[in-house]
Image (cartoon, one colour):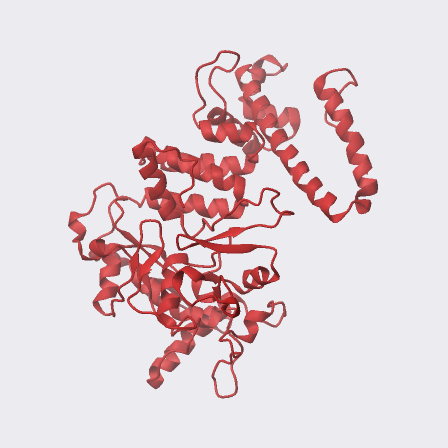
Length: 491
C-alpha cells in the first residue's frame, strides 16, 4: 500500500532533498536484494542503518527545538496553536507525548544560544556529544535525561556528572533494557528516599495479608522488610532456578557428574513448563513442607540455599546513627536478590547467622576467604557470588544462584580452582564461552570478556556493569574528587 508523505518535498538541490532521494533509492535496492547479502554484509548494514537512525533521531530533536525557538506555533499557522507540542502534533503527525519528549531532550542536549562562537554548553554536555555523534539513540538519551532529572534535587553536581557520564558510556556499550536497569540502580543509590523508615513504621506496614479465595485460588499479599524479602526470595528461587532438573520419584533433584543439572543444558521451550511465578510459589510451598518435616532445604547452585550479603566489615559493626546523613554514605550492602540492602538489615541477618570472613579489595576482587579447596566447593562459590553477583557475561542479568562456576583456564589445560581463575556464568553464556568466539581472562582478579571481531572489530574487552553499578558509582565519584579522567577504565 502506497503511503503519501504528509507534505511533499520538491526534488531540488538542497542537502536534505539530495539525502532523501539517495536514501529512497537505497531503500528500494535493499528491499529487492537484501537476501543476496552475505551474513557479514547484512551484519554491517544492520549496524550502519541503526547509527544512521541515531543521527536522524538527533535531527528530530534539533528541529523540534528550532520550532520552539522560532515560535512556529504562533508564526507558522493561520490559527495559533496553544504550544509547540500541539504544533508538532498537527504539523508532522506525532503524539503530544512524543513532541514533549523531543522538546525536553532538546533543552538538555542543545545550548540555549546555539551558533558559531557560542560559549554556553548544553545542560547535559556528555549526553549532547554522544547524541550529536549518533552514538546514542534518542530513546536511550531520554532514559538518561529523565533519570538524571529525577535525582537532581537530592544529588550533588559531582554525583550528577558521574551519573551522566557512566550512563552515556553504558548507552554506547549496552542495550536499552540494561541501560534502564542501570539508571534505576543509580537513582536507588543516590536517592534512598531520605530517612529510612523507623522500626515502628515497618512493623505497622509489614505482614501477610489474606485477600480471600476467588475462582478456586487463595490470594495473599506480602509486605516484607529487606531481610524478610531476602529470606523469602532465596527459598522460592530453589524452584525457579532454570538449572534445576525435574524431581525424581523420591523427590530428589538429579544432576550430572560435573555437578550441573540436565535442565541447565537445554532451553526451557516447552509450553507445558510452569511459569516463573508458579515456580516461585512451588519453591515457597516446598520449603514450608520441608521445614514441617524437620529436614534441610534442597541443594541449589552447588550449596544449600542461604541468605548471602556482602558489606564492609567496619560498616557492619558501626552503629547506624553514626553513618553519613546524606543518605548514601557507603554504608549499604549487597544481597543476591534484594540488591541494595541497608546496614541495619544486614546486622539483623548477622545476629542469627554464621559470619564467613571474606575480604574484598577496593576494585571488587576477592582477596582472601581463609581456605581453598578443589572443584569450586561451596565456600569458593560464595566468594564468586560476592564478587560477580550474577552472570559475569556483559549485559547478562541472570542472578547468581542460577549460574555455574566456570574455569577461565580449563582444568585440563592446567587451570587451577581459585577465585581469580573462576567466573560465574549462566548456562547460555557458559556454552557461548566454550564455543570459543568470546574469550574471558582474569585481570587483577576480575573477569573481562573480549567479543569476536564480527561483534566488535576492535575487540574491546568488556565487563558486566549491571551487577557492578554501585562500585562504578563510587569509582566515578572518587575520580571526580581527584580530578582523574573518568574515561580511563580502572583495571
